[in-house]
Image (spheres, rainbow, N blue to C red):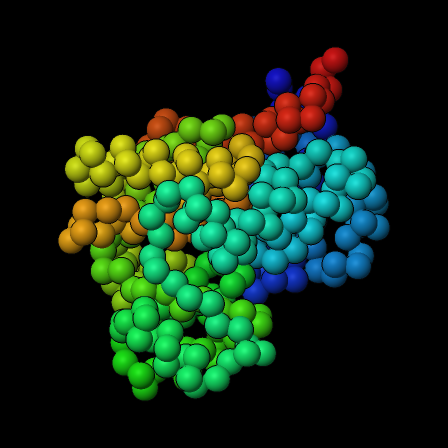
Amino acid sequence: MSPKDLGRIGILAGGPSSEREISLSSGKAVFNALKEIGCDVIFLDIRKEDAVKEQLRASGIDLAFIALHGRFGEDGTIQTILEGMNIPYTGSGPSASRLALDKIASKEIFAKNGIDIPAYNILDKKLFDEVRLKSIIQDIGLPLIVKPQFEGSSIGISIVRDNKGMKKAIESAFTYGDQIIIERYIEGRDITVGMLDGEPLPVIEIIAQEQFYNFNAKYKSKKTQYVIPARISESDYKTAQVKGKLAHRLLGCGFFSRVDMILDEVRKRILVLEVNSIPGLTNHSLLPKAAACAGITFNQLCLKIAEAALKKVGVNKSG
């Protein structure tokens, strides 16, 4: 399939979520990559949810390349809209997208299927009281992590090392939704496994200078290091890839995703933290870094993702 066979590709970026600026960066990178290899591309800055259908119709696109991070882009909403308009799109379908963004739902699925995850508890804003919180802290133990049910890019996440920091962490997480997760903090090595066409890419180890791989470490700090392939034991390396593939499959994810994990070397286990159905897509993001290690350039990666969207629905413009 040549680039021209893909028809007009709309790069959907921006969006109304808290990850808008990151999404715009991903979208611009994908736009430039596909344009460079001869694709007919148009950049669509998605701003208002209620105007999306009109924007899509006016664009005349044959294929949607979704570079929308966070809600609306990764929760199944845009996927449902595109399916209703019979526009092929990249990535996972509505159900898998919702499950991946919903940290509670995905944790439940992982736990039921034998995937190690950190111990956690759920705190509901409507049922919140100090007695419930005290019980959770005793159950999970300090230090712990407080995070929103939804959101990506480590937005709204806090590490709490003593009771003094608990109130601020909870208030921060609750600004993003009515349910939050209180999770056991695992001291270990941050690793991630990108998935492409159902198979794991090389494992990456992330070495952040922050207290954890937070928003600043991901997008602002120049001190964060990425080791590709990860310098971990052969056994751990294979286990990470196997768990990444299983997590991806259990949620029903599409052509690509990225599975974040932590290697607990003390207890000799790898725990899955979450699955990103639309991970960062700039040429310095983690999935493209892993692809590059496997010999796939950023331009090739974007083309593969676009081609997979048409193959998924059996569309081939060359006849």
